[in-house]
Amino acid sequence: MITVMIAGPRGNMGREAVKLVQREEGMKLTGVIDYKFGGKTMQDTGHMESLDIPVFETLDDAAKNKPDVLIDLTNPETGKKHLRRALELGIRPVVGTTGFTDEDIEALSVLAQEKKLGAVIAPNFAIGAILLMKLSVMAAKYMPEVEIIEQHHDRKLDAPSGTAMKTAQMISDVRPEASQGHPEEEEAWKGARGADYEGMKIHSVRLPGRVAHQEVIFGGEGQTLTIRHDSLNRASFMPGVKMAVEHAVAAAGLVYGLENLID
Ligand code: NAP
Image (cartoon, rainbow, N blue to C red; front, top):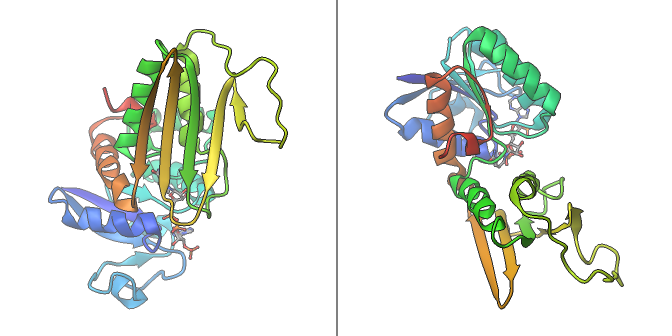
């Protein structure tokens, strides 16, 4: 039985993660971390009213229960702090927030190795989105002219999405040199052709009603290939969360990106 603590249980992702851990036979929810409701139970907070699960104000308080795994679905600042502190406290972190620099990842990898603990940072838990990236790499070797369109809800602050940037980087590692669009093209309205990453154009749509969607369009002589992934709700991320938790308890060291757990 894997004992799990969840940080951010009132959030959109956190609520789904609570449901995931509740229904998985091999996992047990032993507490949640919520800086606004420390000392109460989830029942008292009015969220998930049937759950008699303790709420801890901080990770240090929660560590007294000695969970195997911390799932963090809060925000970039807290996610980063929780990851380091969890390792220091002997807890295996699974973190779904973004904002980690290469230096952070390097330092946290060393710490995870020293502590002999598994840890996963997954900027995207949707297994379909990971497959989209991998399939795009396969296609780019043969169809190097490519544009990416990503669409998200209008509360998203950053653009392009982390997944679009990662896809472009993975494609750029394998694609033969390609010049795209007309060499003399001009934008009558600034931004019309989107962001540019090594000649690839990336377009970001932000609209209410959207969750997380990405199309990678490859163009060739007389043909196009479109690979598309849609996350229709937050439940789409939970099989990836489960995969990350199971990996974190089975292996030592830090994994950055679920693409490293999928063949
Ligand atoms: P959300 O609905 O805003 O939920 C975040 C929750 O964390 C809020 O309830 C917030 O409480 C709480 N929180 C903030 N600081 C906390 C702390 N110190 N301790 C405990 N709880 C704290 O956001 P969301 O849509 O669930 O997303 C959560 C995070 O996951 C974001 O960083 C998002 O970018 C990321 N995300 C990742 C994936 C993925 O696949 N990896 C997918 C979607 C989203 P208050 O609102 O009261 O401050």
